[in-house]
View 1 (cartoon, rainbow, N blue to C red):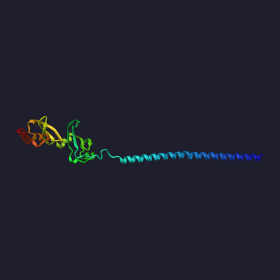
View 2 (view 1 turned 135 degrees about the vertical axis):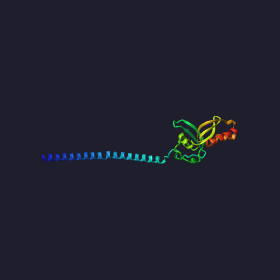
View 3 (view 1 turned 30 degrees about the horizontal axis):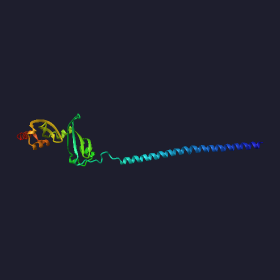
Length: 207
């Protein structure tokens, strides 16, 4: 009877050991492998996505070019200049052939050559800029020329075709002048000093 109880207790102990081993192994396997694999798998997916995103970003960055970086001004381009006052008022607008020094230049190169300009539009055949009056006054304010204002010969300060400020209007009507004199006045007749101005006006009166 006692021997039978001993064997029964031994069997129960062995069975408990086996069940405990199986449960421990299953728990260990489920904790380490399953979540671990999921974590590794997730990390692998994230790593691949990050790698793809990095490659795409690097590729797009390497292919990007600054806007207007390859655009250059052509020799037949026009230069449109708008003179503005300190308050922002538009004083004059003129269109002229592009200066030779700007032919073939890019937007950045134009800004380097003329930092005082504010580039409004930039295209191969047209450059439009705004220029502060104060800058032009410093450059050309000491110059003077004869031109046309309201059909009469007028005196201007500045440089013809670039910058001009009306100083005064004479009584000489342009309609009374020869054709070549009218063309000269349209282009601007520079003079230096009051004496030269008087001589020019006398010659126009005689015509």
